[in-house]
Image 1 (spheres, one colour):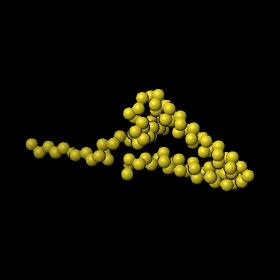
Image 2: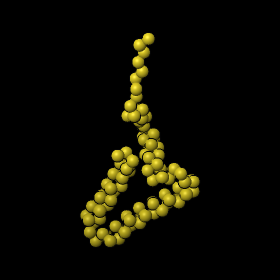
Image 3: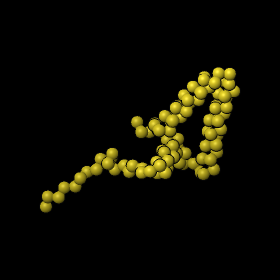
Image 4: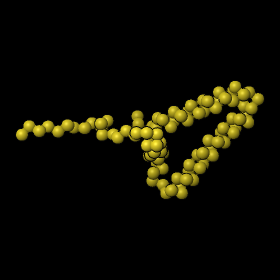
Length: 96
């Protein structure tokens, strides 16, 4: 007679990743969705990620070449670049 169903909010409906492996898979899925890579074929995704990784390492190499005389400045620039990449990886835009 008086049965009440609990209405689940969207926060309760989200399944949280458990463990490092699931968290990495979850972050990779977020990266694919945020950058719209999920609609590309596997080889197009591979090509895009290869270009992105090449730009990343070219930036680090350029920082090493141009900041070679000043070791503390190089490590400061490397830290700031790494911190920026860390924030980008942890805070995808579609969460806000």
